[in-house]
Image 1 (cartoon, rainbow, N blue to C red):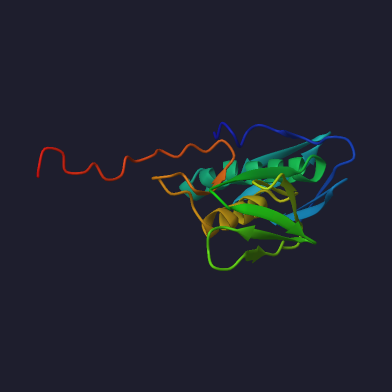
Image 2 (cartoon, rainbow, N blue to C red; image 1 turned 60 degrees about the vertical axis):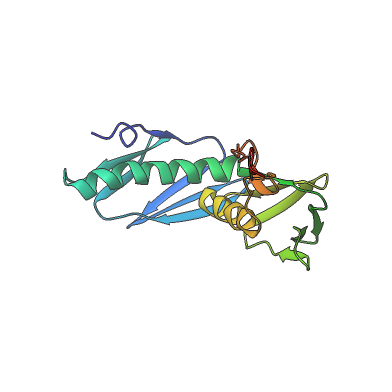
Length: 182
């Protein structure tokens, strides 16, 4: 039995979970999400919690069991609390500014880079070097943060670029020079 899949997911107040056919819909104070469920698992709502059970013991049944439970748990957490991913911008002249729903990034290129927010995602800029990506869908928040980081990934020599908050970049020494030779 999956250690993650067998755990029930508690449904907080002001959140409703509805299961019809192979679709799970979750409504909460921050919005609404839905997820298609594979036919190898069964999702049911029992007295204030969501229970995911698998229909067999094949490998794909076992792998879908924990995945489905985690997806449902992320949907419930997203519509009740939301998700946030923070990015730090390091480098001389590198900065971010919010322009409406978009963010304008100056990342050392000859032109500023503008990134528009997809539906369900909002940006906030703290100072000039910190960008917060907020939303109710954990997968979409992570994808948008990864796309912004990909605009100028951190480089290992000076550490310039866009990195996740708390991400550690191992620095390299660079050229050692020719010691002892004339």
